[in-house]
Image (tube, rainbow, N blue to C red; front, side, top):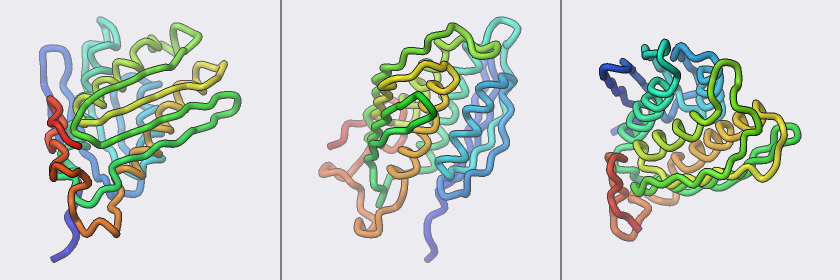
Length: 210
């Protein structure tokens, strides 16, 4: 029997957005992303490239209102797709913690694919907007992604001055941590890395795991 294919697709349709995401956790970082928000597309491309997760996202949202619904719902759908692709989490490394430099900026990202969704966000973005995007929305995206991916996620920008660099270092840090934590550990022999024998699975609602 060959290795399990860790890929999934998720669709979400509301009165505000219509989004479809497809991921392959064991991909090569290829992407096809169209959310209608240029800077968000750029960040999600960085996420794919540096996590080596193939990501395809097509999103239509009420951008004439603002970017909030599309940003948050994209995080929801992508988090659900990653969670679904990881399945029972058998054999994964589970944890990762690292720092990502980008010029004058340094961001630390610590990640546990725990089944216990939680976000700690210590990121100060000095400008209110990047392009046409409200910088407050990046926390909303990370919150939605962590909640629906079943991730315990800490993002802490230690220092930085340029808003673009700060936000991009957060996405690159997430990408690199996710790549490590989702990798199959050859020493685990396919077991779930938890004393309880489960890591939730759905990523939605947060199953308890140790």
